[in-house]
Image 1 (cartoon, rainbow, N blue to C red):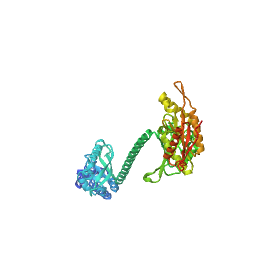
Image 2 (cartoon, rainbow, N blue to C red; image 1 turned 180 degrees about the vertical axis):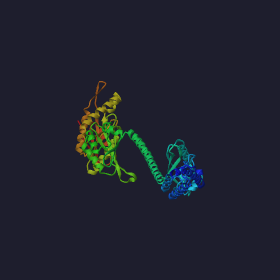
Image 3 (cartoon, rainbow, N blue to C red; image 1 turned 180 degrees about the horizontal axis):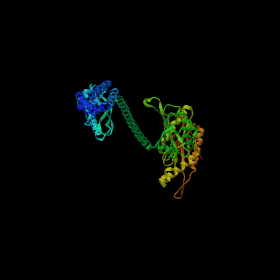
Image 4 (spheres, rainbow, N blue to C red; image 1 turned 120 degrees about the vertical axis):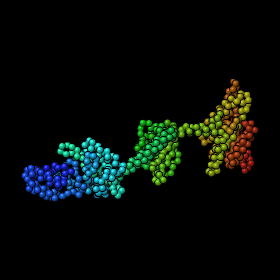
Length: 528
């Protein structure tokens, strides 16, 4: 019985018909056991065939000697392939699909008959992936090496789905290539997740690129701003709301004498102050000023810091508002070394208000001080004294010995009389050989005593020119405001008139102006 079954199984597919089977069975059985045994064996084979269920897929020859009534192993494989969720198919060595399970209809909508009727790649595979799929099948058939790839399938409804394809060579016991096993698993959900992940990654990369772009732009702007602030001669210090240093430019290091290599970013203000107060004349006053400024929201008034080395630094600060003027982000301090500026200003002021020859205050400063003293006198009910001085005998010195000799006389006289004048009294050169003295809160007696001292001082001076001794004297007119006049110009006129009276009397004396109310001229005997 069993040798007959093996003989039947070995028949080629073209001879797999009932007639041929019967003939073959009879021939074999007749040679072995006779016709009755053959008939019994045929019935037994039919019973075995009916006891094994046939698969739902297309039943075709597998090219390796197996038929629809082939051995149970082939049928069990087909049953297993039909029960799986993925698409399973067999491809012959020519690259044609000759069996596929029912899962192809579930996944794509195409029935197995539709798939097997033509080129399965042309029907199932998405047009952009067809060439790739053909190359994969061809490569595995040529090399016999299994491979795996991902591609898209086209569904009957016009959609697409991603699958992972495993191309597995199938060989018989002799090692001959029978074809390929094609296993396709649905990975659409994974691909969608990958796409979403890729989109998220792409969005993150775009955001990162944009962030890096703005960061680069910000760094470039910061570098440009730092370069600009570094060439500014003013020291600039920016501190945040926690009073920590955020930025300081190069000029600040020079102004405060900070070591160039030290980084002060992040340092608290108290630490910075402890370093710089050692250079300041009055550290306590400066610290009080800083404490007051930090309590204010308005821009501070300029404050001059005097250094021990003679430098003067002018400082001011203001709060820096945040974006859209919401809150504040810190405070900026600006320091400017104004030492040279003040020196030049003082020099210009000296040139503007001092006589270049004698270094006494000039006529311009005289008028300013006269108006100021008269205003103070009227406010406090005090008198202001004015001495108008004109030299006697000065013109002959210029005529006989030249202007250089005259300048020497004026310089010597300015020094000598300047020593006689007290601290609250101001000495002026009005031009030529005319001088004046302003005295605040003066009395007639005090002015008379001052005039006497000046006359004595000038008359005692001696100058030698061309071997000869030369001397000059002074005629002085005294006016007292508001006793004589309450207006600056009128007070000067009153003093001048009194001075001319003294000169008419022979000089080297002083005279009081007439009182504005009584119209009387007080006369005082000349000095000497």
